[in-house]
Length: 217
Image 1: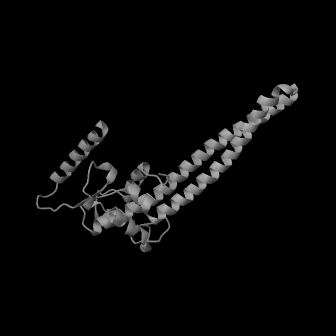
Image 2: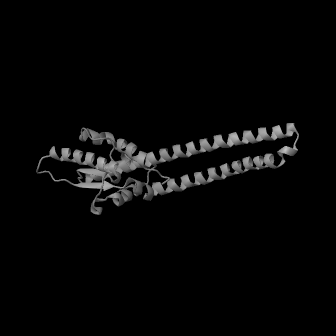
Image 3: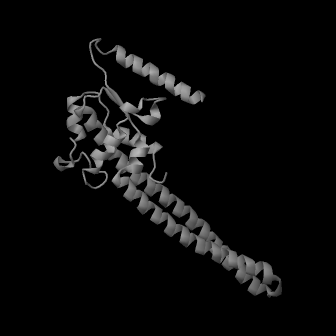
């Protein structure tokens, strides 16, 4: 709770400083986006989630078979080990230790593989969402568009998450490619920044938001 209040205080101070630097006659227009919900509900996110779940199911099945084989050897040692001669018992123990070692290595490698894939796909989709958000923000003259997780409260009327999802869904482009060319439907970040000195790159937002979002959630 204290951490959220601390973050809120920092955010409030930042917003107050920003507003103080803007002419008094300026009209402010704010919005926010729930990036995790956009990730979950956009077409690209749904496909990525289904594909990721398929990978998880496949790996779980393979690891379960390996674990069963390890457990079977362990049961044999406990039930029949004392009846075997030393050479047979040692051979069975060596086989058990080898399969156990392989299982533990494969388990770790599989976990790392899934985590890396999650981060890779999440980063690509969030990059696209960041480009869409910037495009909508410029088109509709928003002063700022925030990520929902960075604010303590926001009126539902300024939540543009559904609009972002619809806009992204209409593009029908490979994930991670929004903003990269004339056919992407979004202007490249380079041209945007040349018009707005000091503005952060959409990829910067995408990198930060991707750290807090995941297709596996």
